[in-house]
Image (cartoon, rainbow, N blue to C red; front, side, top):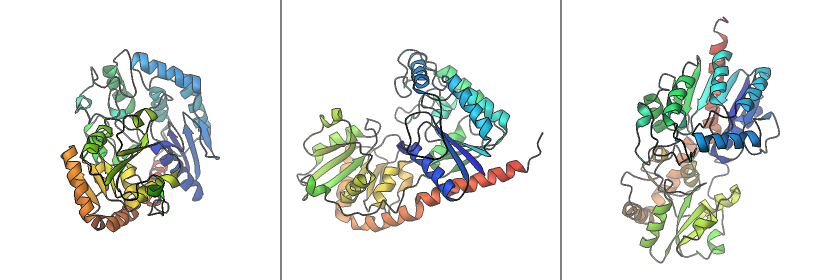
Amino acid sequence: MKVLQINSVCGFGSTGRIMADIHEMLLAKNYESHVAYGRGNTALKENTITIGSKPSVYSHVLKTRILDLHGFGSRKATEEFLEKVEELNPDIIHLHNIHGYYMNVERLFDYLKKAGKPVIWTLHDCWAFTGHCTHFDYIGCDRWKTGCFSCPQKKSYPKSDLWDNSKFNYKHKKEIFSGVDDMTIVTPSVWLADLVRESFLGGYPVKTINNGVNIDLFKPTPSSFKEENGLQEKFMILGVASVWSKQKGFDYFLELSKKLTEREVVVLVGVTEEQKELLPANIVGITRTSNQKELIEIYSTADVFVNPTLQDTFPTTNIEAMACGVPVITFDSGGSAEIINSETGIKLENKTVDSLRASITKVKMSSSNFIEKGQLRAQSKFDKQEKFSNYIKLYKEKVKTNKLQPIL
């Protein structure tokens, strides 16, 4: 079985790590695996394909910024890549993020429809069925159900500074993404699966395969983080994000800081240098770290993990915290609350600072009730080896079924 995965990046970022993990698992099981990506570099040494070049990415960025035509650039880069795919002749093609300034979706799906190969498409966000945005929860928009127009998030990723082409994008995505004979859509959360079934992609089979973490690494680990930062006597409230924004809950932490006692402190991992300047004295800001060991030590030191996200697909930070023995408090947004249960954390439908403050107090009084059960839930439900092996099972099922079909 020969598998080709395609994503915007490889080996870094949440989607890039997922693709790389599946690739390495396939190779370990002696399958032939290839990965293709559009931006950045990768530490992977085996069977990698770069799509396009920096100039083609910059040209796609320009087309997006001016014309709001994200996904409709990179024509030549995509055609050259598809020639390589034709030569490679994979048994199955697994798409991840096909947005990201590197792929022409029209050319890609023309090929997929003609090739007749099984396709798995993992949606990590909502971009595939909107006219512009990757998420719409924050503003409560439901135009994606019937047809996008006058996009209220034109300035959000993939940002357009001038034109609004959301109506065109929606119409053409619907036409382009429809009509693949053998395509299965996979989502990491039930929440996103339900949205897909309501969208114009709802005619395809939809499966949910949760994201997972390496539970051999993410576990309670000795740490001197509190001592190094002078926080020995503090109750530590942790927040982690790759990018902090209003949608991720950054402003909630600023407001929460006003309600903390002298013996409480917030630690935010992933802030920019500019955001650090905005932080009050009782919030410790740490810029984004790619050092997994350092991150695990920070998790292991925390007394509670708070994720006040307002839109998210399935944040693995919740899993990482639980696996490291930290109770989780999260808003019931997107798929975030699916990760925990009442024995491992607290989900909040009431998205207020006061509800966060009350929940932190509750955890302080009964944290031992959450810790062990959180670790067990992470180990039993979100081990990446088990989660990603479900993709291999799906590949084998689809390839077997496809080869039983008559060749016309």
